[in-house]
Image 1 (cartoon, one colour):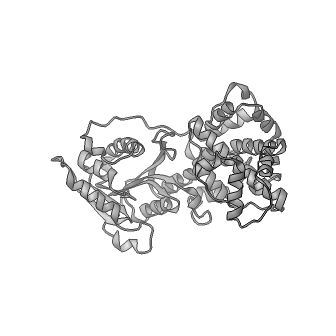
Image 2: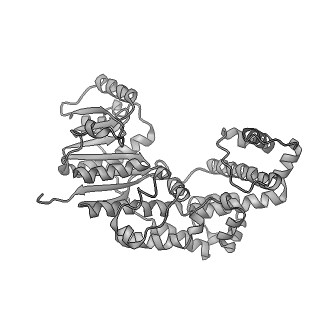
Image 3: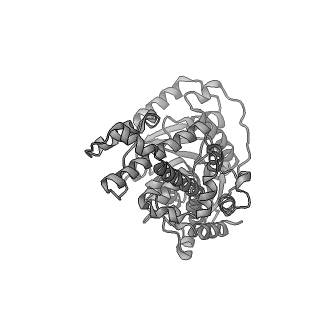
Length: 416
């Protein structure tokens, strides 16, 4: 399927389920439950905790085969499908090459470097946006002879990177590394970066947050640089009014009106997790939702209230301890005993409501990846419209690095 066809198919698919992804369950509770097909909710209600965990991991288990929900899952998976780049093992490097790196970062670098080497004729040097201590720049420059510029706003990180760079041996064919302390995306950046972004430069944004990814893409087009490799994240920090859509194609065809809740859902996209993490996620949701049910029923608070995070261990303690701390934070006085608070949580009525809300969330979360892919295809089309040859692929193993979709763009050769 070509990019435009995939984008239109995703738009049409997501349009059928707008009421699910445009808002959180609790914001419109109890009316929101009616947005989810009853037969889907009933089907999932019959499943065990382990089976629901499999659903959350996007597995179509035997008990749901041939159901409408299974067809929904399969359509979400197939329309979000993107090519996976083949593994290209790098030559063995000295042990210190990965000094200070976490497993996730090492994995990402090992998948990125072969692709950059493959397109090496298109650029002279790489600009790493948000390079931190310069892990990627160090590997590129010292071990693959690719000059690099590491940009970051945190001077402390960069000083650590410089010390590491000076501490270890440089191979004889090592290329140059520059550290530039600048806040990418700020009003003052242009003067500091006038000698960085040039036609022969190639930009790399590994998990550029929110609108920074958009800024990187527009910066590439404005400066007509050789290209970019962009991995977006934190889509909930985008301004959906000015930063989506970017492409003329989306504007002409009618882009979906994404908002904070849909962008948050796209950000999460729910990579696979182990069963213990799943159980914790379920417990957290149960306690949070039970608090809101309590506020609705006892204090007539029909509006969703942001109650913030807690240490994980709090959710595994008695419900009474959790809700007392939250009511105190909200400055809400009450005269309920611990026994009454715990009885409210454990009542059959509350547990039934919590399970339905949890199941609706499991259904809603299936739309995270389609929303993310739909958002990113707009960026692909914008770059194509701006004179770039573009590919969009999965670079990383999703359980290790969930934001694994990379947009690779190289400038098409022209006579200008």
